[in-house]
Amino acid sequence: MQKQDSIYGEKLIESEFLKYADKSKTDSLKIHLKNSFDIYDEDNFKFAHIDAEELAEFNFDFFLPQLNKMLTRRNVNLVVKTANDYETTNDIVINDEKLNLYTKKELDNRTFWDTAPRNFLKKVNELLNAKNSDEQFYLLYGGNDLQTLLLTDEQHLIILEYYKDNEKEKPYKP
Image (tube, one colour):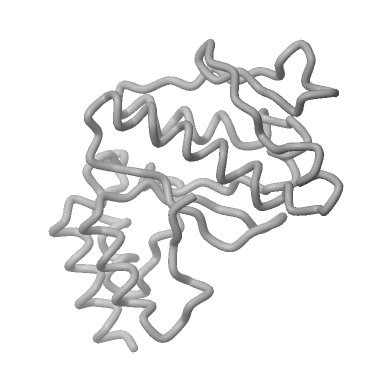
């Protein structure tokens, strides 16, 4: 597997996967990418642990600081707060735009754990598109293990190819 790690790690490096990484940590991140295909390091400014429960319960302080660290490097900033009527609407406000995280029906049938992060990150992806970003957020896993990767189309394809035999490791669009 190490040879495969090296090949795919090199492909990610060539696709500018570390473009926004802290320059003082780039060499170390390259080694980890080549030796173990470690794409889940917050120092690459591509990865964040979200936790669907925290998001669905309006606890943005859990993940927003990491998202903003990533987005600030791309000249994007998120200001997220609960809407005044969030207890009845399940709405939030992202950069002064109201967004419904999930409906009452989704809350009742317990699909809101999936819906909330999808709606949230779809909106963030729209903000990235408006800034002409070539990156989009992709989700990994779900529930308390929900994580996100900020990837270009090329980087996403490299990761999909690497994990071609492991469906649960494949990042998916919100």
